[in-house]
Image 1 (cartoon, rainbow, N blue to C red):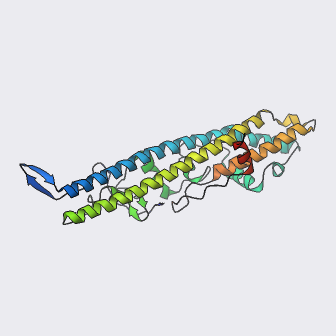
Image 2: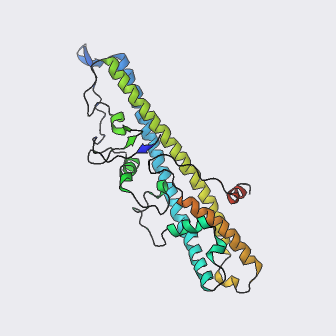
Image 3: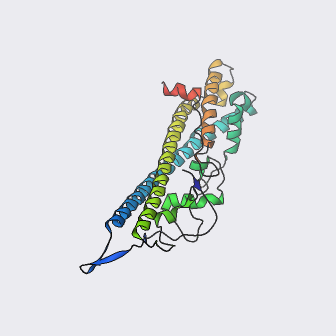
Length: 283
């Protein structure tokens, strides 16, 4: 299920459900009908599952963001320096080392240090992607779990997530228990759809982190044995290593740039596994 990010203002900070219920007096205390109580429990369970899924996704975003930062610092930037020296000394051109899509991805990755705040959206939108204003509500909700009144609401498949979490907080409750049960169950179904979406998002983040990590580890091995001076004698070994490095880092930068979510909040197709990655999986 996709997230859409409208710019309309609405909702409140979700500090209480405020669900409201038709209640009756029973021996001096307020009780509600069994059907409504059960519906409320189902809704609360769906809301709890969504909260747990959000926490897992928050951890996944942090882990993949840290992986992106390490790969950039420990592989991408050293490769930039190596290619610059090789080109300056006329030993090799980057077009001889990297495929065209990797050259474009490398150019899109900033070469200067980037603040943590500027990297917030990278795990979702790809390393180097600018932070679009419409993503702020989604990122803030994933980080803190707040649905705020003075911010654009998080909307799932056209339904405001706040309204699904607290269906009667901003509207008049239905007149009958039957109608309230239906409304609670509809909102619980929306929350479960959101949970399924977050589970799929986390699976994608976990897969990408593992793929980037495998490429990064092998690329670091090749980098450790390469420097511009090793090309002075024009031997075959450094050029063979450079070729292997180009394949590994070329795929690495393409994966780093790959978005997890598209502009409309839908999951993007997972990047295909390259022959280099398939070979790594067999070793």
